[in-house]
Image (cartoon, rainbow, N blue to C red; front, side, top):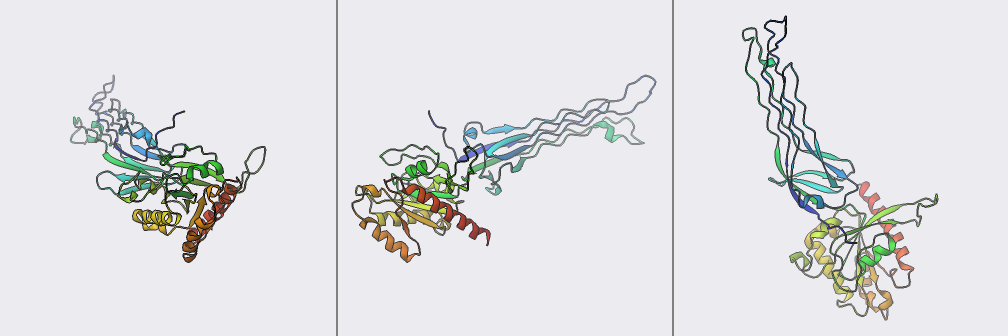
Length: 352
């Protein structure tokens, strides 16, 4: 089955509904001479809101439909009848969407919680009918107000996935394999670079529960698998570094390094290259807690491949994990370690 296209940027034009015009009318009723003005007000135009929807994970719906206009208000009528106001329009966006003004590029909102809303285009106000212009010296007014036009605005949407743990590394380092083993995610896996062309999310249970048959689900966290990085990605090589925005919100980074004998890049050099690309994108990424996972140990002849990494990380106060191997026991240990580190990182951030 063909998977949906992942879209994390979109530009849309939104316009609130115009307000209805006020009405010029006079009361015409038997036995009521000179009934006076009875023109009703116009209805207000509908407004446009953006709402965070937890069931969406892409901005695909705004790739082709880029103009949205709310319903206009109806005109006022006689007998002091006010026109019907236009309905508001609610546009669903994924949780984690940043909303920018298209002209000034000012951040309008960060929709990080499900159901969170922001008003992006006000509807126009309805005009007043001639009943409002009656005065003792002007008892038969024929003036009325036209409705105000709705607000029009260019809006730029940028999606940053909400995840607790982000997987980074060279292409074909085992990121997709890891997320497919520790979660129910099923990304494409193949023995060639750039198999992953878009981020994948997986929910991992750190306590081992499934939630089935009355058992407790336990504590969970979300892992994001990003497309592979290569040297020069910050300058546009490969798929570039634009997908790195999706790990800016993570609490923990997991750097996977291929230590097999067939790896094209030396593990120590691979670590330094990815660190450089993360730093080129954002200094904040290099300050996040990190776990380094040596992958494909079943295809490694000896432990020498990870000794250089051990020395480097020991100088930085970290360590290298050798849990993820071909024996099938490693991924569970990695998942548990990720869960503990993600929780400790979250507690440290909340205490600040």
